[in-house]
Amino acid sequence: MNILWGIIGILVTFGLAWIASTDRKLAFSKWKNIALLIVLQIVFTWIIFATTIGQTVVEKLAFVFGKLLEHAGVGVAFVFGPMVSVDEGGFAFVFFFNVLLPIIVISALIGILQYLRILPLIIHGLGLVLSKITGMAFIESYNGAASMFLGQSEVFISLKNQIPLLGEKRLYTLSAQAMSSISLSMVAAYMTLLEPQYVIAAIVLNLLSVYIIVHIINPYTVPAEENYTAEENNPDKGKSFFQILGDYITQGGIIAVIVGAMLIGFIALISILNNLFLLIPGLELSFQDILGYIFMPIAFVMGIPWAEAQQAGLLMATKLVTNEFVAMENFQSIKEGLSPRTQAMVSVFLVSFANFGSIGIIVGTVKGLHDASGNMIAKFGMKLVYGATLVSILSAVIIGFFVS
Image (cartoon, rainbow, N blue to C red; front, side):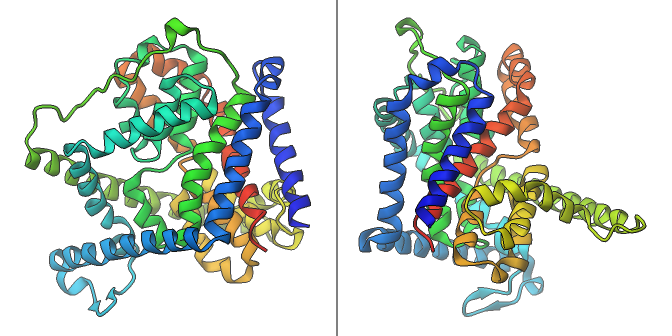
């Protein structure tokens, strides 16, 4: 039955992308690339969930990030003192301390990898491999790899010399990749709220899913003379080790504070809306309940049981209108009432930056690099969220094949 629902989910996702396609005939010609990417997703997910090697890799990665969180806890406890209750396992769970502040430590490690030239080497190598698999130009392949490690802003900065040379279709692909990914600095934070295996699976599945959706919704071919190389734009060039380390630590702190501020604002506003809706005579539904019912059919065709589709739809809608952290926090209070398969699919769906707020982040970043390109992205902002949401849906559907 899982296989049947998975096939239905894939076909429905393809259909939703097909409806919004800019060139359906050209999209159909990409079927070989799409089929290969689907096969790779299924093979990867099988390795992660059905083999000893895959499970061992997940356990090792979870262990590493767990240790990083422990060490981050030592730093947090030193700064905040009695506000943090330290014990053998780290410290008592407080969202800001346990989830957000460790971002600073991960960001510092990213800075070290950048300084040692390790991360750029990995990104370029993976970009070359992806260009062979996806059939897309190197810029798109490089950007897909970079989006797995860098934030929505940093990934565009790494291509600042190429951005002015790209047209609308190629900018859509780059933006969809940025919105469908997460940054490496967020991985540990997500692992405190979701099962590590689903976070790891989502990172790779989203990487491949975005190429599938883009092949359908935004197909194009790149002339040989426009297949630019990703000349590295290194904003850290000439800086000393401690300058780079300080910059990345500062960036991590800024991210932690910004996310914290957004969570306070979004959660408070949702609470206000929930109460306002409950004041309407005869209406016994909150704002979030209504969102859940709107997304309920989508959750159902993904393969989530009808009895759980409203709650799953609520989480999906919450992520879309707020951000993934708000949805993940809500997920904690209801996940025990959901089946393991629904938990897996929802978890994978939540791991990305696909929400309305990301439009502003991407447009603002690109406008800062090249004003005309930023304005171009702003024009297809809603379609960008639509495509990135389909990426999350497709990744969640693939997971559904392997969790019962």
